[in-house]
Image (cartoon, rainbow, N blue to C red):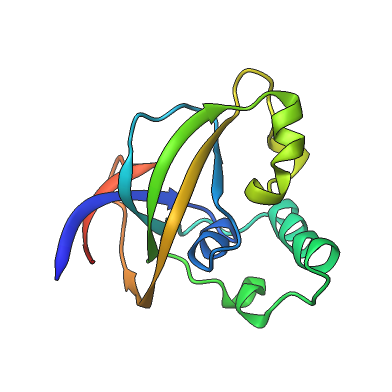
Length: 150
């Protein structure tokens, strides 16, 4: 069965970390009123060196394990819908909350802008067995709609 749901574009490695249930707070510069089931789309944008270093530090320093092969830059899927999740809430980060919740959002400190950084809280991840090739419609940067298996 398929359902038409909102699709959130997320850069790698964050999209794969969400899909594999390592990351449950997406960092954004704006609040969202969207709630409920959404799809996570791994955008076609190349991962930045800073993002890759932050992800690697999470595995090596916090989980005390080597970075799994699936999270190596050359193995990260791009241009695909990877999972569906429930978007529960959107909340402005204070500096203290940013630091306290870093283990959930995993973003580097350079992402934090006082009064302008929001956490979009995610749960109930369902990774797709086979990622779906997808192209964001022209003009869509953050949100789009797509048919995905439920």
